Structure formats: C-alpha cells, structure tokens
Amino acid sequence: MKKHNFSAGPCILAPTVLEKAAAAVKNFDNLDLSLLEISHRSKSFVAVMDRATDLALELLGLQDKGYKALFLQGGASLEFLMVAYNLLEKKAAYLNTGTWSDKAIKEAKLFGEVVEVGSSKAANFNYIPKDYTVPDDVDYFHCTSNNTIFGTQMKSFPEVSVPLICDMSSDIFSRVLDFSKFDLIYAGAQKNMGPAGTTLVVVKEAILGKVSRQIPSMLDYRIHISKESMFNTPAVFPVYVSMLTLEWLKEHGGVAAIEKLNTEKAQLIYNEIDRNALFTGFVANKEDRSAMNATFNLVDDAHKENFDVLWNKAGISGLNGHRSVGGYRASMYNALPLESVQVLVKAMQELEKNA
Ligand SMILES: *Cc1c(COP(=O)(O)O)cnc(C)c1O
Image (cartoon, rainbow, N blue to C red; front, side, top):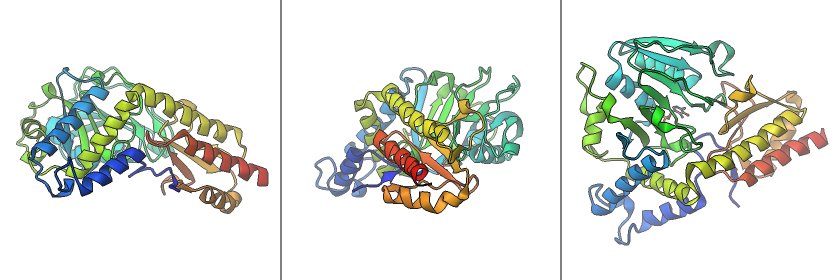
C-alpha cells in the first residue's frame, strides 16, 4: 500500500496524475512514442505547454488581466536572482520570514540596495512580522507567502504602491487570494504542482522592461514571454505533470474547493497538537500557522523513539522536521488526502495512551 506521504518537497502527487504521467512516458497522445522522446516543438507538446499556462492563469483568476504564465527552469532559487535582474534598478523592499526569503535577499543584494522591512530571523522565524511599512520609493516589495521550513504562512498581504512580488512555492493553488494584487508570483513546481524541474512564473507584463541593465536572454522574462516558455528546451516532463495536476485541481473544483479540504486537514492536525499534552507547536502565534506545513515538537524527547515507531508503523513517510527547526513537520499539500492526517492524529493519540 502507498505510504501516507507528508514530504515537504518534492511531494505527494494525485494518484491519477501519476498514472497518466506513467502512461505518457510509454505512449504519449497515441503517437506510439514516449513523451520523453518527442520534440518540444511538436504539436502534441506545444498543446501541453499552452494548456498548462492557460490552466495556471485560469485557476488563479488571472486570465485577460495582463498576466503571462511561464514554465521556466532553475527552480524557485533562480527566481531569487531573476526577479532582481529584471526589476531591481536601485532599491527593493523584502520581508524576511524564513530561509527562502533570506536567500532571496542575498541574491537581490547583488543588484541593488535591499531594505529589509521586517524580519523574524532573531526568533528562528517562528512568526510573521506584521508591523512594518513598505517605502514608496522602492522598485518592488518581495515576500514569501508560506515558509515551508518553519510552518508559517502570511494570511494577509500589505497594500503597497509598488509591484508586489511573491514566492508562493509552497502554497500556490492551495487557497483563494486576490491574485491580481500581485505583479509577479513564482513557485517551484515540486511543492504543490508537480515534480522538480520547472518553476511557474506568473508576471504582469507591464512591470517589465524598466531596468537599465542588459539582461542575458535566459534570464530575461520578456524573452521567455515572447517565446512562450520555449526559448530553449523546456522541462517537458515536469511541465506535463504540472498540467495534469492543474487539470486534476480543476476537476476537483479548483482552488476554492481544495482550500476547504486544506483547512479541514490543518484544523485536524493543529487541534491535536493543541489538545495532546505530549506535543507542542513550533509557531509562536496561532494566526501565523501554515495550512501547508505544520511544524511541531515533542514536549519531552524521551517519547521520540516510541512516536517514531508508531508513525512508521502507521505507514507514514516524510514526517521529520527540517534540520533548522527539528521535531516534526507534516506537509499537507493539495494532493494529501484527509485520511493521511487522520492516521497521523491517531498515531499521536496512541502515543498519549501508551505514555
Ligand atoms: C522549496 C522552496 C524554494 C526553493 O525551491 P527550488 O525550486 O529548490 O529552488 C524557494 N522558496 C520556497 C518558499 C520553497 O518552499
């Protein structure tokens, strides 16, 4: 039987997506050829790219609003510098809410001045700073919607007069937001959309073309837009699997429907963390808790051996916390069924009974 996969990323994908992806590796689109051995410029693959970008915009409610969707390579990590390369002329504002924001800041500093408007670094990123103002004289404001490692999530976004840029790698398509507030959203596929190897970038075209520096072609959003994500060979398989996941999401009612399920899963685990005296949540303020990654610890490490046996026996995989936080992290991306969280909660309750 398949494990209950709580992996933080690369992460669980829907069973039907995996089946269709496996079939396409053998025979894609009745071509009697593998998806992996055809030209990315073939009619069949161009249709995949078109459908994937259309679905991304549709599911975010961004069709016909001046946005373009791209499937690029280099991971979300390349976007840390691509954003700055394309948009940072003099000064940019960043909110530092975790390891990934911190890395984005580091890259941006290569291109200009960075104003860190808020940071929870001194508290090992266990909360989302809220008392900050974004200056009007910056080229853009960058934030990270969900902090995968620490289990915090921004529940609201500031009203800003400058372009709003967001790394949504680990909660894209997981909840309803007014996505039109954002000017550029990026997300590595492997957290909530597909396998590693491609990054979704959704960008409002009007913000581009304003920096004075020369931009190498591979790093220029405008080139990728004009070539419809085919400036060079795209990550054919990851784009295809992302398309399948977006189709799956649409069939299941889209972002609003999955948000309901995600909320239910999050409530279940957090209720147990709060109720069960053996466990404690990592995040300081309950309102900052992530619906995607629940981070928690044992109050007494003496129970670790027993708990690890219990969840392993229950068929759970990928529960260990990131090394910078320790403890446990239950990543509950879109494709994780409610049942998996129920199994985890049961293991936590069993530990309590045996203690
Ligand atoms: C995983 C992750 C990244 C890094 O993604 P790569 O695709 O490995 O570069 C960046 N930001 C967030 C929020 C992430 O969760």
